[in-house]
Length: 174
Image (cartoon, rainbow, N blue to C red; front, side, top):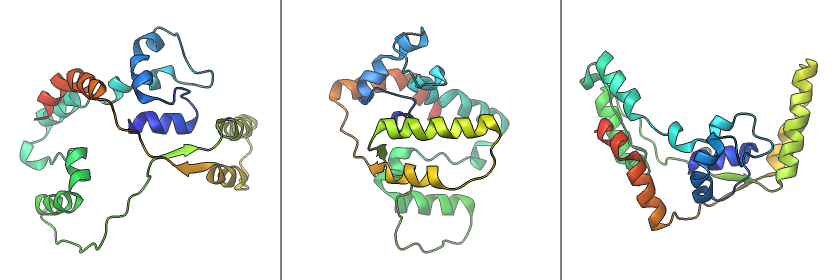
């Protein structure tokens, strides 16, 4: 869901609903229903991007398991202090007392998609023409066009679809 939100924010995705975007993957892989401003259609294959089991399995074949610490995102978000303490213990380093764990790169969205497309277009023209000079204007416009977003909860059916899709991958991670 986070990946979809980021690609949507970057202006490469036009389907605002994650569940619909997820269901469009096969069509998009076949070149249909692609957003007009998507430079890399394979980036819309959300499931493929989230498969980690095979990569971790390869890592385990190269590095002793006791030298690897996997932290599942859910464990981290459910109890960040415990995840942090476990990591410090694993690394064998002294704990640095942190009073609060501030969220960084929280969910965001564009106020106006057309403004995002315009800033990307101007940025692409600058790069194409070899303009190195930065004025910061595009960054300011992007910042003014950005607002926080709250993700809607996934439906039970979607959660089940995701569990089924990632079932085999999750067995490789355990």
